[in-house]
Image (cartoon, rainbow, N blue to C red; front, side, top):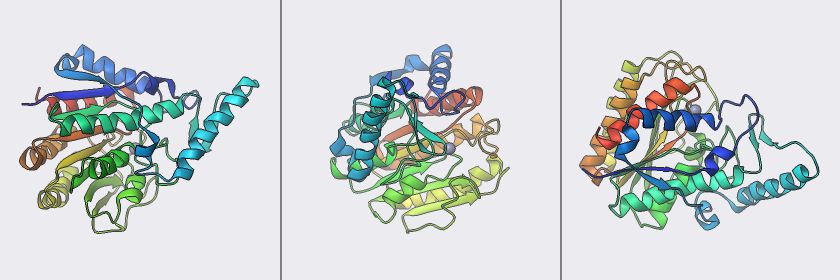
Length: 317
Ligand SMILES: [Zn+2]
């Protein structure tokens, strides 16, 4: 049994998007409190997330997008120094503060450092407790609380820098991972499997744009048992046939029954079951190698309990 890494960084707490915003630093506090109080944290290898290099971010994003994010940060710094407000809006529900840039580099850096450690055999798998999340960030724009696509950057990094031939991305967030799809669709070295509430934000994904995308739109109020059937019948056979060398998870927990950001009916038990099925595939094909990155999950209790359930399976406890 290998070790499970837990990657995070203090910078991920400093990014915030204004009072009352659901994608808030308290999410990480809720997760850490839960892992500490349950003793799960004791079983994890705590790792400091490094900053991603811009050259690595460019594996998944175009230079104009990266320059725009950096430019907005510089502009905001001048505005704040001149007495302006501490935030600047990048889309109707996404804004930056002076710490967003560093947090986004740490979040992507966590995913890549976890990839390095898992591929080196130092860890069997890893969970990255990071924010901002990533799966809505497309090649050329920030949206839906996301700036850089942590999982897509790390997937490209595994392919380009580690010369892997096959990486899988599993996305169980309630929202369609449109950004990851934008970046990975048509790249036959990657396979992405997901389910997501539909029709729902970001109103995409009902038509898979390429053969390497397994998109399963589901209606509001779909329950966990039906989701398990989807995983068993539509994800697992594709993952088994693909024989991934590394599996990434876009681990959003906003499909939880008690999370009112979405209207799906998953519970902690469902996250345990899904994680176990992914782990079965990973153990069979790639020595258990999994890099999981936090995406959504906005109600503190169910978020914290679901992350605990997920990490318990990763760490075999
Ligand atoms: Zn989400």
